[in-house]
Structure formats: C-alpha cells, structure tokens
Image (cartoon, rainbow, N blue to C red; front, side, top):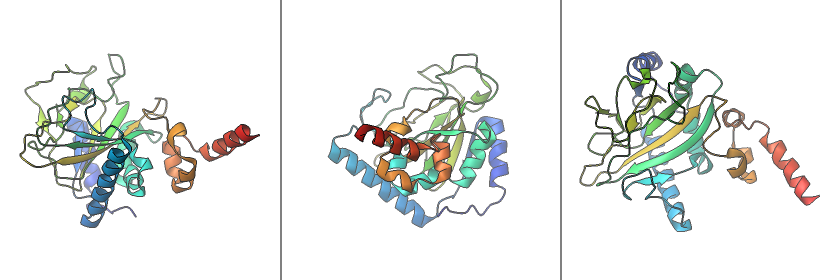
Amino acid sequence: MIDAVADQGAAARAKADLAASGVAVVTDVLSPERLAAVRAAVQLAIDNDRASGRQVSGYSFDPDDHNIRLWDLILRDRIFRDLAEHPLALDLVAHCLGDDFALSNFTGNITRPGGGRMYMHADQGFLPAPWPPYPMSVNVGWAIDDFTFENGGTIYVPGTHDRTEGPRPEGGYPDERAVECRAGSFFVMDGRVWHQTGANVSQNIERTGLFAYYVRPFIVPQRPWARIIPPEMEAEFTPSLWRRLGLADLPILTLRSSSAQTG
C-alpha cells in the first residue's frame, strides 16, 4: 500500500521549485508506521550485506570509510519497490523526463558521524558538455531520517540545472546549501544539479537516504536488471515496475533461456 499525500498542492509546488532551483522537497509523505518499516528493511539489508561479506563502505567515490552504501534495493524488500513506484514521485519524474522513463538504480546512503563530503558532481555527468536544456536523469531521495546540514544532508548548488556542464569536483561554491527536511519526506533533484553527500559533523546522528535514480529510456541503466533479478522474484514485480526496468518480457526470456540451457 502506498501512502496518500494529503496536500493536493504538493505536486504543483514541487514543479515550481524544480523550475526555480532544480530541487524540490515534498514533506511528510510516509506515515510513521511505514517509515518504521522502511528503517527495519534498511537495517536488515545492512546486516545481510555484512554477513555475506559484501562491501558496505570504503568505496572509491567516498572520502573515507564512514558512510554505508546499499545497492539494488528493489531486490531486497517489497517496501523499496513501493517507494520506487510512489505515484507522486513518479509524477514529478515524468514532469522532468516525460512519461517514458526507466529506473536506472535504487541505492541507500547512510552517513555516519565523521563522514566527509563526497566530491561535487551532477548525476548526468556521463554526458559530454554542452548539455541540452533539459535533464537526462532525475534522482528521488527518500529521507528515512531527518536531513540536516549537521548530519550530512545532501549539499547542492541551486540553479545549476540551468548550466550546460558539470562542476569542479572539489566544490566549494559560495551558494551551496543543504537539503533539509523531516524524516518521511522525499526530494527530487534534476540530473543537472551540482551536488554531493554532505559531511556528517554531528556527534552521534546517522542519516539514511534512499535514492531512486531515473533516466530517459534510451540511456543504459546503471544496473543490469536482466542479469541480477533472480527468477524466483519475477512474480513479485508489478507490471508497471517491469516496464520501468525496461524488462516487460523478462519472464518469457528467462524461461526461454532456461529451456535452451537444459535442452
């Protein structure tokens, strides 16, 4: 079940904010009960990754080994798949990318005290400059904890969605600001916006963010969904999610592949 957004003006306000700054925050989307369930699913994913020996920290794009990274969340729990298909979030993605778009990745980023800033970047930095005057990607960040400047709320440079190139990796722009919002909110970020994971300068507060990354349909997804979705999970995916993964006919292909290998 998807939580309803009581404020019918949320979409209109978010679209106006996206046009103005490239970032829009929609507050209080998840109920306390659903938020608790998401937190439990995140902790289970962390525990499972650690138990299996999967890398959870110390990635090359992070400045240190404080932060925790989670991958392929749509394979972990139905609650993450529900977030990836949240109606209001998808309406805002479609506003930016058009109705035909794909889910490229869905990850978790948990900043822990002492964690430094990630390098400054734009999510469509894979494109050579100059960029066209419209985004190729959109990131929807789910705030599972409060996002603040102190606990590593995403740092961004407002208005950079109007730029045609990416930033300096070292950042340090005078108009940087942090995404700050209550737990249970989400924010939408145009793929051209310059941003980075903030430094967690708090004493003892972790900040969990889940990031659903959507792209235009002709862009190759970051994750090879056709190879990593276990066949036994196929029945758990909705038809609309199959379409967002660009794999509406994957169950048939899987059966054909299995038959070919055993025949």
